[in-house]
Image (cartoon, rainbow, N blue to C red; front, side):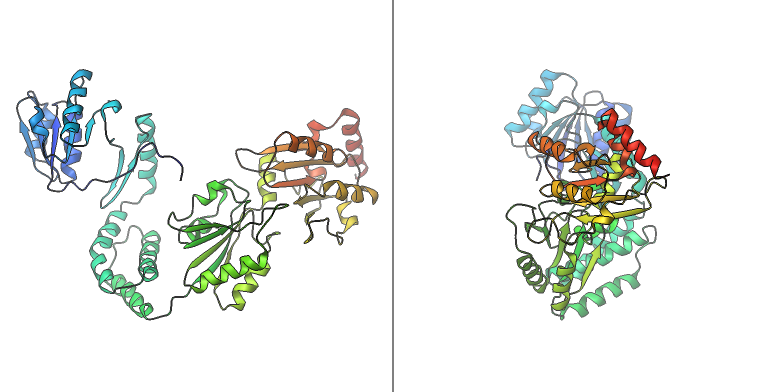
Length: 483
């Protein structure tokens, strides 16, 4: 887990005493917030503002008592929290020290150096409450984020959260297994997301409880989902991929999956690297299949997470067959292919109507790690095709040489792209004839991660700036000859 500037926690303050020092408008805002959380708020202020006086007459929830004097250290003993709306730094430091001396967490408004905790921006659909913190770095930015979340969180979620709280004892009474409880709340959540503005009904409650009770006696049955992680940018995950990852018990992932994608998975899910690193020691496919099946037979929801799309050079067929032979339900969640991700970053159309009538994906990596023997060389030499080569690093030179032997023009635009869509992305533009040297130089210079090679005249605009003048002219001549 990445470091946190603050630990997001939620205090249970109902009926507990909170001390607030200060009589300003800032104190009034904090007093309203604390009372709304059910706290019994004691406000020490010799000259309280009008907002505080009005609030004391009609607090939102917990009692609010105004004490017309300045705070004293003895006032802090036994409080759940101590809040100081104090402008003077010296007094703020004294207030914080007094609170800490009696073991009370303290916050001095707008003075992070004196604070044990911070107030964040809040989205209130209580009992669903969302807090947002920038660790004091940019409160206005935090408020802007809150406004964005307010716009997308339906007001009706308040009723669904209230229903969840009231239904929880009935769910607990069923004594369900962990999987059973999670299944109940996933179905509840699905209903909430489908109809957020509809109040949850008693009929829905009985339906969900009835299904959970029936399943209680069933043998837990696991499942397998092959999920496309896309080329690396987590924002390119499909909505379905996010949903499946957030319901996973176990995630089996390849080395090519970007860490930012793993962060999307349910935090409690066990995440296991199962190799498939490319040109380095890896787990055997049979071992991956066996592990996947074994975990699913334990009743776990297993997500097999693969870079790009699992059905494009991802050996998905073998894993689907293994799950089906074991009698396990299996689904496939497609992903943005590495080729699509690369094209988006290059801002080129792979099927530009003036330059390509065909798009082909090939792998340059056979089972033995060498160039496949059964590639269609005439197709690879087709000047009207755009070709995307997967896993090309060790075999590109041989592939390019053989394709040129059967007619592929050496000056055909080509580009290699490492770690497409990720922050460390590296583009290496060249021609078919010069790309091997450019690849070697890029790797020596630190280029790393998943690599693709794209070549053909449709990607010429992306590679053209790397061509020497005579090569560019030759390439233009080739295109002109095509008509």
